[in-house]
Image (cartoon, rainbow, N blue to C red):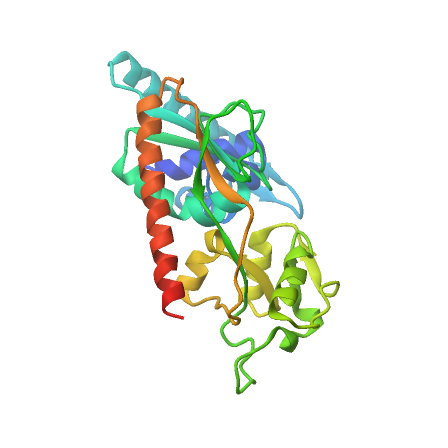
Length: 305
């Protein structure tokens, strides 16, 4: 073991993993990916020179040494928090954000570090729900959900509209010497995002009879669909909110000219009555600026095609 103290973020990850008995559960509690938490624990084990967890096929088990370090870290963090409070240091504003999983994981989270760097006095805790299309029952200060603006009992405002289009890996249609058509997609390469609706809609909009929208496979997470398309498994349905980073990097392309407007949009709701109303206002301003930058990107992207 080295003389220097271990990384504090890694110790924080250890406390969460010990409490949750799961890397995935700790990642959700911390607003990180499971891979990031696993890497922090592995680095901490390397620093300390001993394993902190025993890893089995579908579970982990903390070692006696790991439990001792976790207890020490938890106690130290509690003392620091108490000491700062007693010293009169202002506690950071806490924002509880609940959002649609696709929006949070594929659009918001990659941008969030910029907000936190510019606003070190604000802490954002995140929870997600797959397909969140109504305000959740859980307590929240800020919520992003998708739908058509038909909710009662909550103040909300549109944040991001959406356009839908097929996406594929850049070389998916490489053998062709002409622009691809929908009928060029082998039916086994169709990847459906939750339902077969959009592939039917695209076939109708393109005026083609192939491919059969009943073929292919269905995934219930947009992230899985996009990952499958990126590695060349097939062609899936993308949208502006979830594909921007992949289109910008070139990992995915739009092989067809057809785009369809989605009847659903992402909406933002804020609980302005909470104690962190000033922080919420700053977060709203930042979100709207990011949304405008997002729309500006796609205005230029579609104009260049």
